[in-house]
Image 1 (cartoon, rainbow, N blue to C red):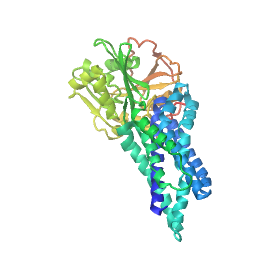
Image 2: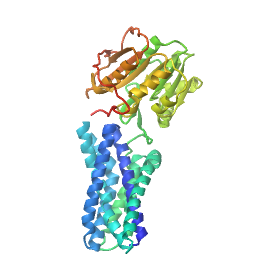
Image 3: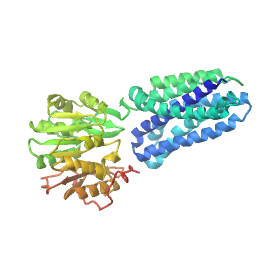
Image 4: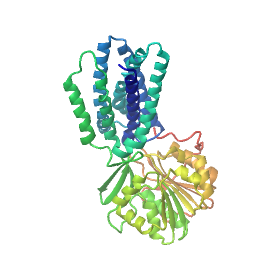
Length: 465
């Protein structure tokens, strides 16, 4: 094999491996969320596969050349099929009841480990061939092989995050990874031939998976996996299979989700008719549009990281969409990360609502002392925070500790506990005492939160276990 062909194959397979790894983290989110724990699991499982594949590939590389090439070709055919099959296998495992941290780890191992082994299987043999192709220049040949692996990994990460996942979605990305693996076969000639029928079947399977495979998401970007559905007289928006927002089909209906009614009622009690309110987390835009619909002089800034969510709301949630269209001069939508916006914001607000979620939990960098200190600097009045946590759980304790450090008056209420043991925990923090509401949404009640260490940028929230 020519030197540059070997280098090119190393680069290509490294790119495929990293694209596969990033796609694995994206497709895991609808079933197990996005957090430090999920990404740690994906990275650990895929890297374990890479290490195993490299070790196994080294053993294969020591075989006689024809036998080694034949084994590598067989491995690549199997890898292509496993890559295309990964999203379906992950969905099946979730359907069979894989839940919690243990279920997440098991799902990642079964869905992603085998293909991660296969994609690195050829690397030792290809490196050996590259070195043999440059007698007397073994050092530079090895260096270029290692550099090709690193460069391919960089390219694969960029390709997944900026191109394939936003443009074609996760299912097609996995199928594309399989197709690129199969594209390496013609360059690995020699030894007993791989059964043509197996190759044709693998090509057909990966192509069918990319074209006809059931998409994990109805709408997908590099940040969100969204579904919109009508259920029980409501239109509901789900992100990573977690309820993000809902509005009633009937025009006269109230806000559909109980916690939003509490925040709406607090805003009505605590702010005036011309209030300027910051909403970090656009979601279904139900809260900012409710504010603007009820108060003709009010203004709102809604910070939403994913433009796709805004597009889906405009197309699929008619009540919010109508207010967004009719109050464009009073509703400023900023597509940016909430923390970046807080760091750069120059205006002042009468109140702020922190209601940003990534899957079923708040992004860690938005619940630190530093983030809320910046929010305190630009907000004159109360701040309202929506969390999902166990009763008196670690997330609620850490955020309450932050609010108590920065505001003299902090109150909390908790909603009904779900079958998973979690509830909406709502906190209000203000520079002056807050008047009690006339009533609370059904199932909500005041709650005490145990003192704890405040989250910081250095030591923050890691996600639900």
